Image 1 (cartoon, rainbow, N blue to C red):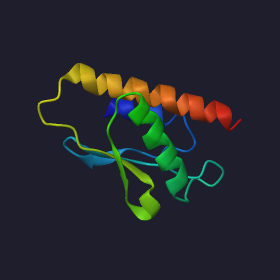
Image 2: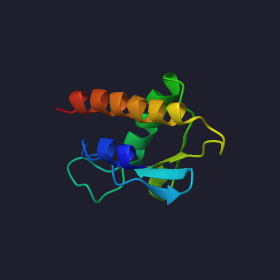
Image 3: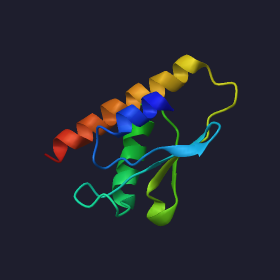
Image 4: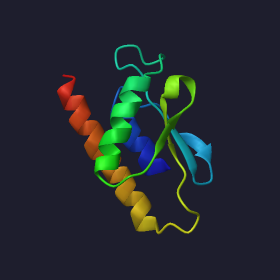
Length: 98
């Protein structure tokens, strides 16, 4: 969770990850107003992650939370791969918004 938090801090549209165990939620926020949920950006992230092999869902307020529900026996290297994949997707989207 620490590495995931480090990645999300780099992007203004990603909030602080939260959850219990392997149930993880990453809030997606409006980049210019970080307190407002952004369901459209969450959907965009979800679709970009799916293209790279990550299955996640959107939920919460306005479907603005990326929700991960991996199996309890997921190998550690796959979790790290997800964090790296999220970092790449978020970096790409962040560049487009500059």
